Image (cartoon, rainbow, N blue to C red):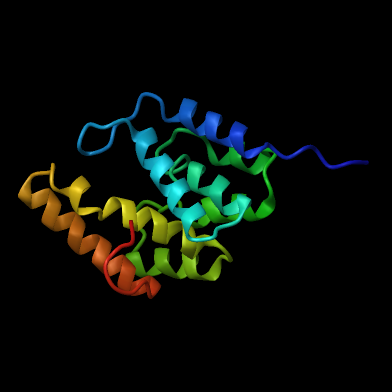
Length: 155
């Protein structure tokens, strides 16, 4: 029996765009711009097709755009599913536990690095109020340190 076909990357992108279509980021921009930036960042860092697919879906379960049950049954490579689940922060989870799961999942660190790079982009943070900007910058710096991502975020 042949395994079910895997969704092509173009369909994963379209699915992610539909799932997040009504969402905006903290600055009021369409959330799909963030997904595009993370996918582009993974591609620029030499990521695989599985990692690029995970980049498109990295916030889908955490943001309730798609369910964890959907992800488990989706026609996606096991590695893509594992990366998405690794990047799904759990309620009440410590940053250390979250970072540990990312580091323990092959391919997840690269996707999180691209996510952090876009989240911490100074141009993106500049439109936020000072309190939010400072809080997020500190949070992203801690996560970069926990993951061993050195220096300033790449763009």
